[in-house]
Amino acid sequence: MAGYLSSDVRKVTTHRLTEMKQRGEKISMLTSYDYTMAQIVDGAGIDIILVGDSASNVMAGNVTTLPITIDQMIYHGKSVMRGVKRALVVVDMPFGTYQADAYDGVRNAIRIMKETHADSLKLEGGEEVIETVKKIIGAGIPVMGHLGLMPQSINKYGTYNVRAKEDAEAEKLVRDAHLLEEAGCFALVLEKIPAGLAARVASELTIPVIGIGAGGNVDGQVLVVTDMLGMTKGFSPKFLRRYADLHTIMTDAIGNYISDVKSGEFPNQSEQY
Picture (cartoon, rainbow, N blue to C red):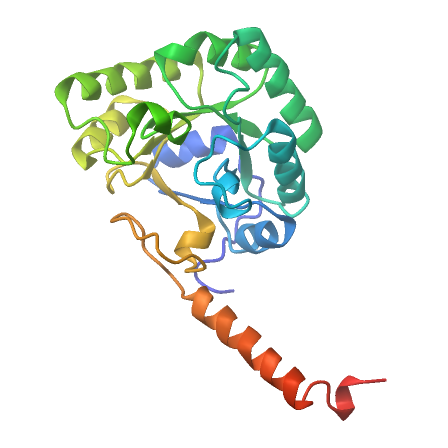
């Protein structure tokens, strides 16, 4: 078995993630949006699969995450769940499904869990959504928090720049992180914040802290799978490491197929009945 493949085939749970933090084992997390990719990512041994509302960008071509609907997120969640055996699956609650009213949030959370069979949900925000978070957890649904750059609030920020560089925003982020832990969140994502601040949060919390553009002194890392595989072009933030160049590989393969079809080389004698 290849070195990166996990020999531990037990289902990853929220409790196991806490144990990983306690023993200093880093947590790996990637997005997936469909059955085929989820099978590959899960089979490689990833700990957490995020069915991200980034599907709005990656799968639907939208500029922001805001347009994606609960029905679309349920579709992606169901597709991913069919391909996963080991990883813990987290589904993003999309914009507009929990911000207005805590009871709406609970109803939508229950619907996503019942229809996708996912393991947990992720919500963006701190104090502003804390009552909703408490009620969803009170309904028996595990919640992962998300602070720092929150893409669902991009119109408020007006920029995708690093968040919490100023003292006031940094202190609010720390307070929000503690509020989310106290509310019962099983983990927290920190996006695009100073590495020192992320390290502080990870050291102060007992729940795992997963970073994206938040430095290495946290409990794990998450990236968008199409970005780290090099399927996308024109998006190169500082925190993104590309582990392959699938855009070139796929373009070349498709080009070769086109050439073979045009020339009559495909199909050959052994490829027909």
